[in-house]
Length: 121
Image (cartoon, rainbow, N blue to C red; front, side, top):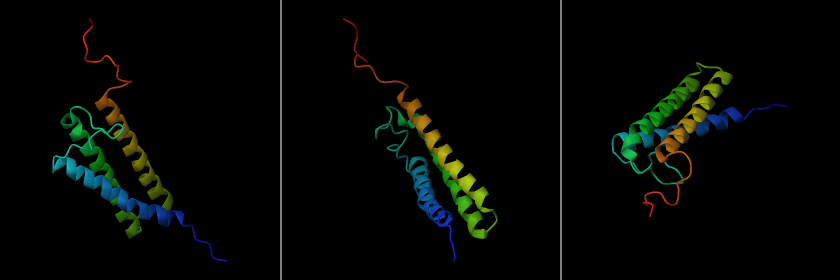
């Protein structure tokens, strides 16, 4: 009986849209100057997205480049299975944590108080 592990195939196929999405976000932020997707928290950008745009662009650009490099290396057969899965998986998690940390930094830590911006009587 022939047994085929489908995880590497599906994981490799999933890297294509991930790389496209991240590189497209970097292009929108860096070239088109569209800051609507910078440091989102609950779907809303921070009050000053221009301040955090270079960081978000670099996070997406570096993540996208690493994923594209992994795709090319795998298609050329230059890296064994465990190495490319580790590199791609680490890149996915690091990018997610970096974007999360940036969004929290941009919006401020902790909940907003209800009396924020109002003077005391």
